[in-house]
Amino acid sequence: MQPNATKTYLKEVILGMNVGEIISLPIERTVNVRVCASQVGLSNGRKYRTSTHPDESVVKVVRVK
View 1 (tube, rainbow, N blue to C red):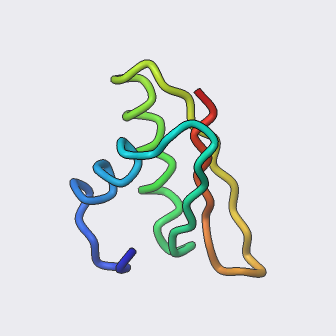
View 2: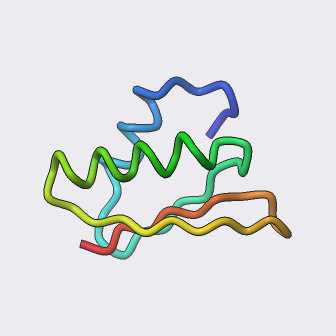
View 3: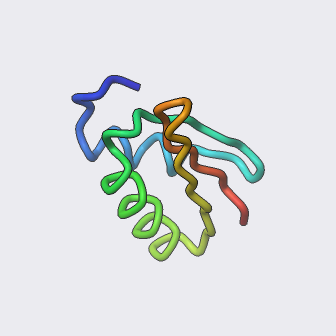
């Protein structure tokens, strides 16, 4: 994913995830990723887990449900 991608693009990526799928995004987008995952989860009855990995400079999103 490009660092300057829009929120709409981020939402589409998160919404398109399958259960168990993991995506990695630039760590600079941590706040946006967490907010978007939370909003998508609430709106669509899904559950996501996010984790930051400073050593890899990424934030990972996992679709749990």
